[in-house]
Amino acid sequence: MTFDPASFVFASQDAPSGIRASTVLPARRENVEFTTQDGKVLVGELALPESGEISATLITLHPLPTHGGFMDSHVYRKASYRLPALAGIAVLRFNTRGTASPRGVSDGEFEEGIGERYDVEAAVRFAVERGLPNRWLVGWSFGTELALMYGASEPVASQIEGAVLLSPPLHRATDVHLKEWAASGKPLTVLVPEHDDYLQPAEAHRRFSVVPQARVVGVDGAKHLWVGEKYAARVLDEIVDDVTAAGAGVDGLPREWAGPVATG
Image 1: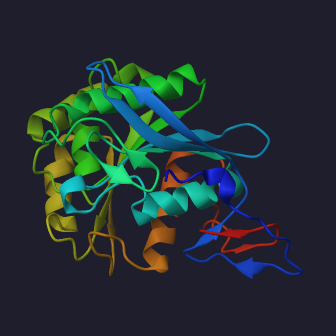
Image 2 (image 1 turned 180 degrees about the vertical axis):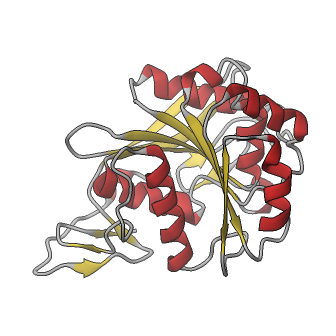
């Protein structure tokens, strides 16, 4: 059965409570589908602020599906649970071709990042057609490869503001793609865990030095999968700082919430 985001049950609180991994804050959530240029129907979810202007739009690209990555990978799930309410951000999550989650299964099969080009283009096109403003790619692990390979070339480049990368392995993405980003001039933030399995901060600084506008941030203590609330919250703070004018604030996003909550 396909998960329906409207099934969350929200309850009022007598006092503020801490925001935990499973805390779901209010938003307008809907299941979405869009079709790629090569005819694949991709499934996903769009979470929007309940009211007010949208400050930014995140188009999320998930980790490697052959190793457990999907639209519900925990950082992206927490982004959809929190950022519409805390920062007025729209969060688009979707399964790339052949990927399954409780939301459903996207058409096709894993294509090693080649056919996934059409997935990136379709997601950005969907965001444009929905009128979602200030669009940013957010890639994690395999998703960073997709952002780097396809985000700085058309038809995507002119439709996004920039990208945020989480744990880039730089396996499929090459210096050719990095030079395309350099030429684009678009902002690129690179969050690199101290204990990453593939690319650690010192090497990341060296590899991304060909992109003058890249901001490479080493995160002490973190690992490739950003396990632990401390690190997931740090990632969300960094994203909000980059993609919104207001930013996350001196102390980061709120860690407590006084309004209605649900449990995911």
